[in-house]
Image (cartoon, rainbow, N blue to C red; front, side, top):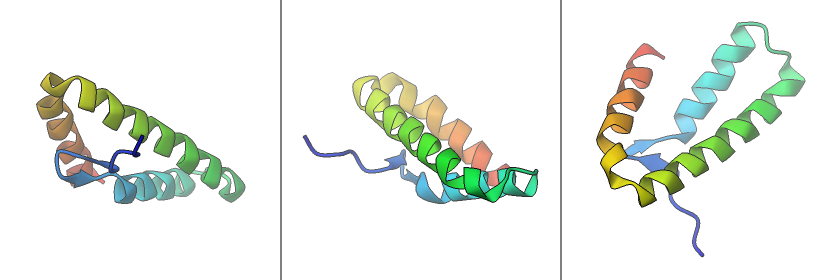
Length: 73
């Protein structure tokens, strides 16, 4: 089994994960916890990509939500 690309609707998720972790660090997250948060967000992202491979009807709302997140980050 090949791992899916970490992108949804053409939106790469790795920079979003980095931005979220950096935002959490600015909000007070201790730096040693940042790698754990990054790992958890990566697992969630892979699960989301896998779910969207199974349920293509959720691709459009997810892409819209990710675009909104990127705009506000």
